[in-house]
Length: 230
Image 1 (cartoon, rainbow, N blue to C red):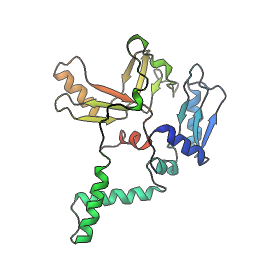
Image 2: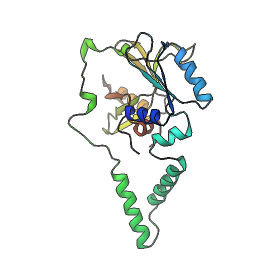
Image 3: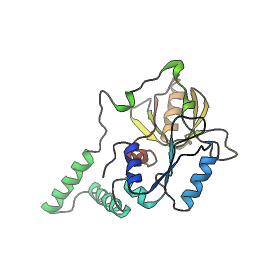
Image 4: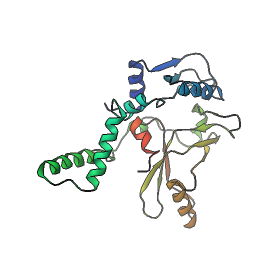
């Protein structure tokens, strides 16, 4: 299985009976986080809040809260399948075993890896609606306040894409973003993260800006790449 976006994965979970829609009004201030916390700890289903108070946008949470949903998100029925694939790739990196059969198998694995490389396109679905300048309002997002002592509301599962100011290479990380106002967020990238390294490099070069883009709602497998040391 392969999911092209988060909507497709949500529809899949609903078809499997592993998603619940919540239609009653629920607050993004502590209440959704508390409900989700109980669902995670009890092994409950994914949740889709369709009526977040004061917001027009629904909010999905606990999509990856069980081993089964995690396996589905990564395109397998069982996590052991993924483990076997990764073990095979690691062996491949060390060089294929002697013999024509093993070398042909290694060639097939290399071809599969090659298909996972990013592609550049002229137009993507994220460009269907473009909002710029004073029309930008981050507050339309149902960002959560998760804990009573949190300083504010946070975007908790973004893909933060930054460019190294020296080499131009890109990194994808998952860093919490605190919403300050309608057009500003803080970026919580810890000191050892690659995004933080890019930021420090830009300061050393006395650059006024660092190239950063943020993607929300990507397909499940891509979402998880941001949390892995790849």
